[in-house]
Image 1 (cartoon, helix red, strand yellow):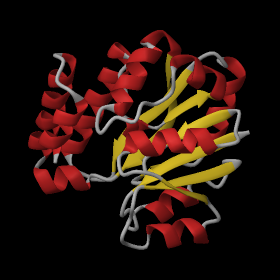
Image 2 (cartoon, rainbow, N blue to C red):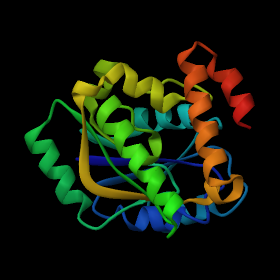
Image 3 (cartoon, rainbow, N blue to C red):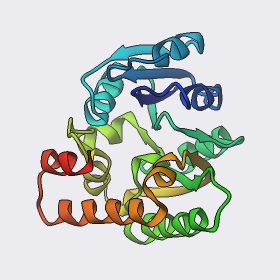
Length: 218
């Protein structure tokens, strides 16, 4: 049984498409972090199991995993949608590599060269460093999730913290594509947003606390 777990906060613009693409999951769990828009209504109309948690993906991911019924978890951001055929890729991975986690190939929903350049950088980071971010999704068995210690309720870097504990040897990049909204890059600027993400990662690796990083991010 596969449980898709989606943390959401004021995600009305993207959540419907995210959930529609996940119809082949056995369970949909949306964990709302205090939305003031139509996020909750959209989740309910799509038949998702709705939970509420403290704001912050770390808290929401923890709550979703604690409540989900599946033997396998698929964590996915609300502004990301999986391409057709994703379930075939997932089932193939489960059968062939039950002791490994997996992420998807990253794509941005913008038809510009800057987006293609960022996608190549993300692929290199994922394959060479074993460091995918949460917007690539994460497929993992319940047993491996618990063995690694699960997500921690961090205000930022919860995805980096988790995959570092997982380790690159236990992480596979699937062929299926996860398309993420380019809204943050369009709003902040392509290279400014990417440089900001890289700076936050470097500061985290140098020991800055997730709480301080979250204040810088905001």
